Length: 163
Image (cartoon, rainbow, N blue to C red; front, side):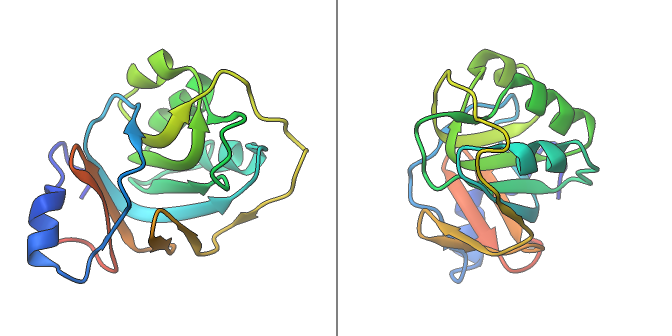
């Protein structure tokens, strides 16, 4: 479901009462206001090394979910990574943390949700992280292979692709 018009999150919630819905903490930064796809996860803290590695690989219409620990002290996704993500076929990125280069992100055909924008970059090599593990934030458990859909009404996670 990476088509131009993903299903509306309101319709998904009506049809799937079991859907997980994120707390309304995210702002939209990307050039694609609505997006949907299978989840890939990374867990990092103020070091975007694993984020960079993920978006430089094939996205195949997936959504990268980045558990940045909620840090508001640096941007984990910026313009260069957004360009890589869009070029490599990622549908979107959800960051429990900050982005930077907000205008550059808005110019990319990529959905991006994050807590805020912040101009300071992360420090690569500062902390280790993990990829492919379940992550928990905004009241939701994000697991690899489950489906995330986002639009102006919110972010919804389903165990399987929406109908």
